[in-house]
Length: 213
Ligand code: GRF
Image 1 (cartoon, protein in one colour):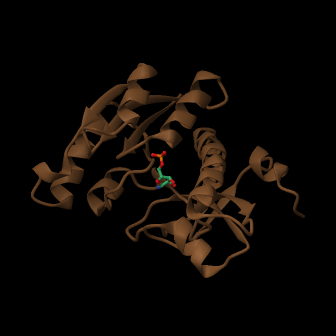
Image 2 (cartoon, helix red, strand yellow):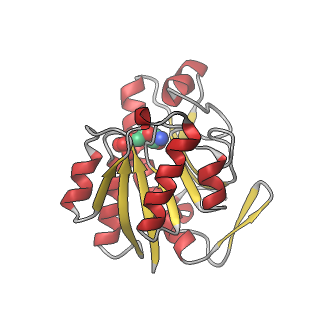
């Protein structure tokens, strides 16, 4: 079974969604460790509640990003991690992590990439006036919010949406597509071909829910 490690910095609702899917048997992986760069991250409690080992590695204790990533890689390797899941992790990762886990680091971003990378993606989308918003699960490369896309989920922007209401509905989508994407990885069904990710076998369940094509 796939062994995953989750990196967080805050609330950890995506972590919770992953742990819930593991618990109900729809995500066939084991979360071996949850690592936070912030001691106060609420997600650490969620991990403990699920009986998952936690580590706090404070980035401020290191001289730079690469030294911090080296400590993170050591902790991930010690836990036997095969897939690194970034879930609200607020540090930019370096080649130290990416070279230790090639094509084995995934992230979720609350926008339909390549639109609105970076901070406050939901606000960017609202201010831009888009009609469709959503979330993206992607492999991580050296550019932030940029690597090959695995799954996306979309919602319609309501006329009275605020940044908060939009973020809440996008988060619901995130909680569906992130475990689904990890399950595809666990089944060995993701083939990275340049920028594109081919999904082997049947269309993912999430795609089949969308009223398109
Ligand atoms: C999510 O919106 C995710 O897309 C972004 O950070 C947020 C983390 O939320 N990368 P949570 O900690 O999983 O609740």
